Amino acid sequence: MTDMTVAPHRSVPVSDPSALSARSAPLPTLSLRDAICLIVGTVVGIGIFRTPSVVAGHTGDAGIALLAWLAGGVVSLLGALCYAELASTYPNTGGDYHFLARAFGRRSAFLFAWARLCVIQTGAIALLAFVLGDYAAELLPLGAWSSALYAALVIVALTLANVLGVRQGMATQNVLTTLQLGGLLFIAVAALAATPAAVSAVAPPAVASPRAFGLVMVFVLLTYGGWNEAAYLSGEVRDPGRTMARALVWSLAVVTALYLLVNWSFLAALGVAGVAGSKTVAADVVQQAFGPRGAQITGGLIVVAALTSINAAIFTGARSSYAVGRDFGPLAFLGRWNESTRTPLNALLVQGALAVALVGLGALTRNGFETMVEYTAPVFWLFLFLAGVALMVLRRRDPARPRPFRTPLYPFTPLVFCATSGYLMYSSLAYTGLGALVGVGVLLAGALVVLLTGGRPRGQAVTP
Image 1 (tube, rainbow, N blue to C red):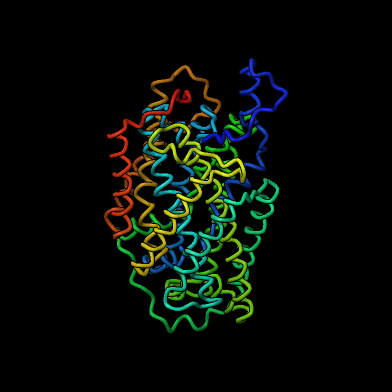
Image 2 (cartoon, rainbow, N blue to C red):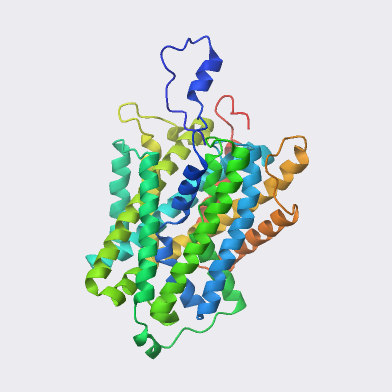
């Protein structure tokens, strides 16, 4: 959603509304390389350092595990082709919020905004914080609650840093993404250099049933999650009609190849049982290759990468919440900008408090990472499903609209993506635990807010 925080230049006459609008609107400045770097940097978070253990534990077979990662890339590509048409046809920094508003109306868009604040974005922050906590606890244990303590502390610290006005530029993002990919390649090479001799003594987990494969895909596809955030770039890329499709396809090709390489190297180094039994698989494979010092260095690098990912999630999440607060009365308190610090203060504080509360939920279940995946998954896949439906609705409702990119094999592609999303939403409810129920309950609370208030915009709503 557009962050309308920059005041118009004083030299612009108040009587010239078009000039004011031009100055406050985002400019198409991002290149194809910038878009690819942002998408890859968003998708390749630190989940890849934790999810392989969960996948190996549920599959019990290296071939099935790698098949799951390949299938995740294919499903993500199908969704990306649908989003490429939406983003190139209706370029807007509102992303999903904009598409859902056009297809289903403002109430559905409000419910998405609620879910992004209370479930999707805050759940992602807590999930990332737990991965950091697992690795930090290996470097410096703080007792039985080490992971949760580290997770809560880093959320509080980074939220306060953003309240004080911390900014990140595009150049920094590009450098950090390059370092992140380089670190993953280093870990993959280290894993291939490790000696797998001691693995055979450990019995592998039982091979997954077809039913359990659905749960595996929930974890895999959340690790691929983030490609849909590319929709928020569509209002700022040059030539979105061509750039968005190319950026999404190239980004997912890079991510899929990287994930397959990393998981293959982990399995080659530790075996299925070794990967399944590790909460810090990257550090373990580097230790096997280079000794304890290498594992410590790897753990430190992952903690730094985690801090970057969490900070980016806090930064973008608060600003989308601020923009929604400016649109809708029920969330008006989020739409207040602090002029002294130039930050969306209320949005940052509310988001931080919710994320810390989710860390508490994860600590109670003793499986913080898994609980946060369960919490976010049903809601995440519900709105991806609705985005796929929105593509078909807008094709029928708005046939004359120029479409610079058309989803290949329409309507087969969006139908398969919707069916996959629906199945994963079902799997995330049927095969998971408490976290999923809490996430759905929070979404239902948002639906109650819509019923009680009508999800009415504040003043004149932005035309979708």
